[in-house]
Image (cartoon, rainbow, N blue to C red):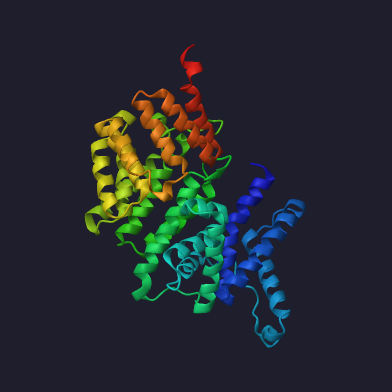
Length: 405
């Protein structure tokens, strides 16, 4: 790993902790975020030159706290509060979960809760968040800005929500963690398929939630889903970083311990808690994980689980995955027929996943020319370099020039 990459990773990990610490102490979310951003810029300049400090998070908290104090001292109306400021908060306290709940304030719409949390806690860029929501980047930037102003106007406080609000806030928090993990598992842009700092952070925060709420089936289901999915990480790429599809992965490289933990979590949740979408997704991942070979996968069971998942409002991506399961059980033509019903969904318009699934099913149906066109369309639509290279390779493999040799 290069020094620049190491510093970038340290900053990404430390920034949410610094923001949480400042918000806990001072309460002004927007001002604290501005101060942390200034501290990150200072670190990006100083650390490569002077070396990384022994306590990166403490350094950020200290510098951001000073910047915040400096800004407030410059405001004439707040001069009387200057002497009341305490030293910057301790670097040892982890307030990430409280920050999650603050970002999921009830004054915000669910979409704004999720977007703000991805920005503040996960440190994702506006472009990455927009990709996760399947909306234009400019729209997402406006949504995040409005969300911060709404929290300020609503008098949001840095504390755990009351019991009566926890259910609604928890649903938004779980979806946030799910999106953070997905961005790390398959990065929407850049040269790497996986961003381990994001998957690791999502798993860490979900473990913390599970420790606080061990009887919540959906928290357990989400943690199980993350563990079972992340268990495949080592087998998802070749040595050169190129993508290896699920059916071709060396399953001996899967993390057996993570699979055991994930299966135990989802089995316990399904037996003891009300059924929910994260438990169903974890159950699907468990069926894949427990198959010793790709050809041993219990596709009829997976199809039944996807059908159940759609009843919970699974969305277009669930329907895409169900089309793959339908093709495995009933043949590729049946899967292609299901895809046709998704053509009008505006959330999928221009998304590479739709064309990638279509290409896969066309290839299985014996239509290599049409499959090649869809592979190329999917490659043009994705911003992930490993995915693009894989899709381009699939298209090249099916090209007429290659087939006539």
